[in-house]
Amino acid sequence: MKTKALAILLVLGLMIGLLSACGGTAAAPSAASAPAEAGSAPAEETAAEEPAAAPAVDAAQEPAEAGSAAEEAEAVEAAEPESEFALYEWPLPLTEEDVTFSVSMMLNPQLANYFEGYQDNPSWQKYSELTGVNFDFLNISAMNMGEQYNLMFASQDYPDIMHSALAFYSAGADAAVEEDVIVDLAPYLEEDAPNYLYWVDKVDGFANITTDQGYRPGFVHILDTPSITRSGPVTRGDWMEALGIEAPETIDELHDMLKAMYETYGAQCEFGADASGFSGAWGTNLAIQSFPSVSYPIYQVDGEIVYGPVTDNAKEYLLTMKQWLDEGILYKDFATRTSNFGTIADFCAGTFSYYNGDTDALAGAPYYFTDPEATMVAIPNAVLEIGDVIPFDGYNSSMGQVTGQGTFSITTGCPDVELAVKVLDWRYSDEGSFLFNYGIEGISFEYDENGDPVYTDLIVNNPDGLSATWLTAVYMDEYGYVEHYTKFDYQMSEQQLEARELWSRNVESRYDLPKGLTLTAEEAELFSAKMVDIASYTSESILKMLTGDMDIESQYDEFVSTIESMGLQDCLDCYAAALERYNNRSQEA
Image (cartoon, rainbow, N blue to C red):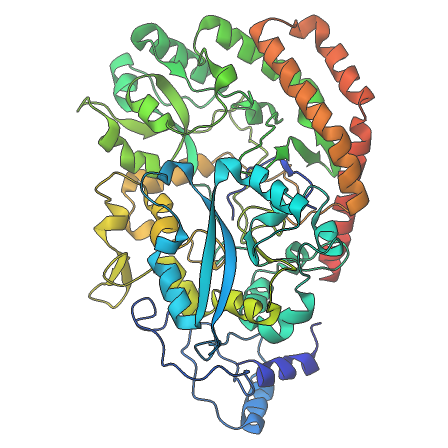
C-alpha cells in the first residue's frame, strides 16, 4: 500500500480520540488546529463533488486554496511528506439528494432520565446539517445492546450503520463480512476515507483495523495521544485522617485499612459478582464480563495464552478474598452486584469504604456527600509487595479495536455505502473532530481570550452533577472520531491530575492481548461453543468458593480439571493462533 505512486494518487485524488477497554481480558470472538467556528457555523456550502485535486496539508495547518493538479503534485514531490496520507476537508454538503441513514447507537443507562437519544444531540444535528445527510436513530441501552443486536442478526434486519456491532457478532469479524452482514470497507477507504487513513497511519494502527482475512469492517475510535488511566481506587479521606491511616500501598496495608473502617463505621469494600476486584495484584484476572460487551479472563504471559481462573495465583487470590469476606470487610451482597451503577451514591452515603472510581467521581463526590466534612481521595493500586506491578493496563493505546465498543460499521442493508463512508470519514477531519470533541459554541464550549475552545459550565460544572465524560454523549459524541485525549485536563483540579499519575504508577501492560486480535469464523464458532459453558461453570464455582459451598483448598484442583475437560485448551489454542497471525500482520502492515 505504502508506495510513492499511491502517495501521489492520494494527494491528487483526495484533498483529530478507546478505550476504554478493560485490561487483561479477551473480547468475545466478534471476530491539529481546529477550523475557526467549526462547532458553531457550517463551512461554506458548495455542491458535493469528488475531491479531484486536493492538496496535501499538514495536520496543524488550515488547507490552502487548491492550485493546478500539476503544481500540487510537484509540491508534494518536493516536500517528501512522512506519510502518503493527507487530511482532506470535504466539500459540504456531501450530497444534494434527500438521503437518510438509519443508525443504531448505545445509550448510557445512567443518562436515561436526562437524554432520550442522539436525535437530541446538538452535535449530531449540526453533523446532519453540514453533511446534508439525515439520521434516523435506533437508541439502545447499553444493558440491552447484546440482546437487541442478536435479534437483528437473526432477523437479518439491520440499520444502515451500527455502533459496536462487531463486539456482539459471535462468529467473528471475518464471518460478519462473509455472511453478508457487515460491509468490508477496504475497497472504499483509499478513495473515500482519506482522513481516517491519515490517522490510522499516524498511530500505526493498520494491523488493528484489519482482520485476518484482510477485511476492514469498521471505523474505530482514535486518540490524538496515547491514553492513560482515568480510573482507580478511592476511599474516604476524612476516615483515614480520623483513624490515623496513611494511604495503603500493599494488599496487607489495604486489608488493615478496610478492616478499621468496617469496625469503626460499618462500611464495606465494594466487591462485585465477577470477584476480580483485586486479582491484578496477584498477577491474574478472573473477570467474566457481559457489559458493555462479553469478555473473558484470557491473556498472555510471555507469549503463552492463559485462562486466569485456573492459575495457581488465582487460587491464592480467592483464599484471601474468602478470608476478607469472612471478616466482613467486603460487600456482603457481592453475588448480586453485577454492575457498578450507583456506586458513587452508595460510597458517599457510607455504604462503601472503597471502590474503583475515576477522576469524574473525585469532582462529583461533593454533590453526593451530605456530611460537609466527608472527602473522597485517590489511593494507589495495592500490590503484594512494594516494587510489584499490576500487569494489565488496557488504557495504554491510541485507538480502539475494530471488534470492540465504539466502532462504526456499515451493514449490507445500506443503500449507498460510498456516501456512508464519506459521511463517517468526515468525523476524522479537522472540522469533524472539532465538532465531536467540543460541540456547539454557546452550548458546550466558548472561545477564551486566546481563541482556544473551553467547555461551558454545563459540561464541567453541570448543575445536575453529571460528569463531563457522560455529557460527551449528550452534547458531543463518545466514539468514532479523533478524540483530543487531554481536552478536559485544563479544568481538572490538582487532585484529579495527581490521581491519574497515582493510579498509573505501578500498572504496566505486560499481559494484555493486542486490541486487534481477531478469530477466524471456525475459531470463533469453536471458542463460543466451549467457552460459554466454561465461563458459566467458572462463575458458579467461584461464587461457591467465596460463599463456602466449595472448599478452595481441597476442591480447587478438581475445579481446574473440570474446566480442562470442557475443552479449555481448544479455546486457548484459538487465541494462540490469533496472536500469531496478529504478530505477523503487524510486521507486514
